[in-house]
Structures are given as C-alpha cells and as structure tokens.
Image 1 (cartoon, helix red, strand yellow):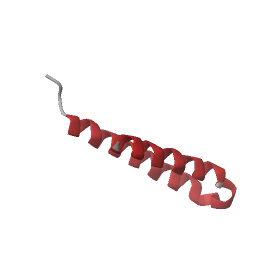
Image 2 (cartoon, helix red, strand yellow):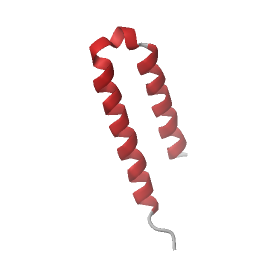
Image 3 (cartoon, helix red, strand yellow):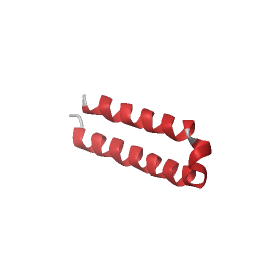
Length: 54
C-alpha cells in the first residue's frame, strides 16, 4: 500500500510540474531534479528494506 501511495504522489507531482511549467519558469528544472532524486532514493530505500531473497 505504501508503494502505491508513493507512486501516486510521484505521478501527481510530475503532472503538476509539467502542467504549470510556464508559471514555474526558472524553478522547473531544479524542482524536476529534486523529484528525480526523491524517486531514486525512495525506491532504493524500498528495495533495501525488502532485503535479499533466499
């Protein structure tokens, strides 16, 4: 359930970034990079938490 909520938040944030890109202007690229780093770290944390399968 936590994974589904995380992916939903990510998709909504990405939609908002690109929907309001003309309003965000110069802040679009830094916000996009922050979103990419958040996605990477969040999914990595989920994979590490699962641990190795035996």
